[in-house]
Image 1: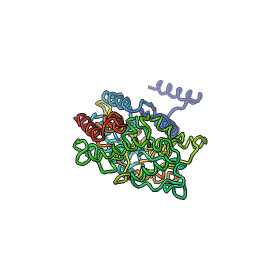
Image 2 (image 1 turned 90 degrees about the vertical axis):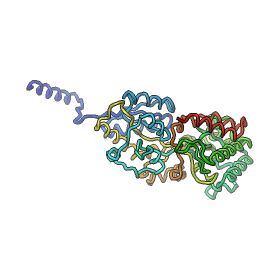
Image 3 (image 1 turned 90 degrees about the horizontal axis):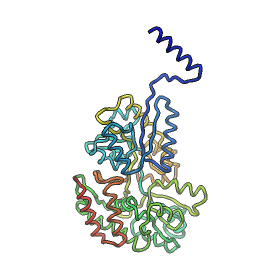
Image 4 (image 1 turned 180 degrees about the horizontal axis):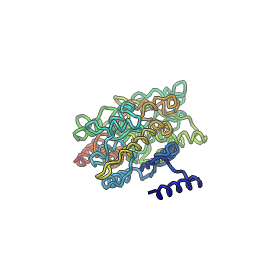
Length: 430
């Protein structure tokens, strides 16, 4: 015993002599998975690096996986055998499916306290979307991301749709919006409105926004597809999108990248797209490669009520097979989550609205444009239905590209499209 003490003391002395650091604590390594690429990925990696620099006792080991179905499939299979991460990014729209698969662990009040957070720190819509049916919290919202209406002011000059400061105004109904698109067409816009008319996400988000603005329900809490008068409202949404197509106001079968290029190249007066394209617009403007004044606003009230499709990136802790996470590891994970929330202003630079209200209501965020202009949507956001067949990369998205897109391109009537969509989605319900 005496010899071992001498050996240990000698080893420590040698380590000090050659400059090897000997930590006075047990370092926690937090295994992290995300699906963030592009500008989102760059920003998240920067946040992880900053956290690691500030926390020598907790180190995040991050891995980025492929977005969509591949990510969630890997989460499901790895969680079942205890080979998953300690923390992961998660779309709140996928939460119902995650709960049915048993891959998510509850986030307790004690967990939130360890993170320096509380439930009422978050916007109500996001916090609600992070709950299970019984009110248990299963994720911590990080942002609110939605579609917004981008506009090219040059096509609206001299019209009633620009105010004295050159900002978009006067769109309070679908008739107003269609008038603005015709003004833009008359002023030389080749495609007044652009969105991804040939991609599932672009079609679904516009359709769901128009349906929700009428007070329509896509999937009820008891699993009925388009209950009550929601079928008629869905038909009206498809009819509206079809009219935009037949009038030549929107592109035909545009894939995502092409739809963005129509706007950035100056051919479209309006773009319905996610807040995540704000950095693209800013970068092009700063590089003097845009050629027009642009802005982005909350999607106007085109139908009966003010609301917009939205989702949230969130943080979740997966199950560990049959094991439970070590309490000290879990405390380290919650420390990571709490730090990320309190530094969400850096994430907001990607166009997102922080779900954590102290950051969203900060002076720094109020000065961040155009985010501050459209941040009002956080109080009126409509999340995807709480269903296992809804959410990112789901059968609901599939029906948008396989049924709604062909309808608005004239291959079947809006009524037939809604009937097919109802039948298809009902067949997917368990």
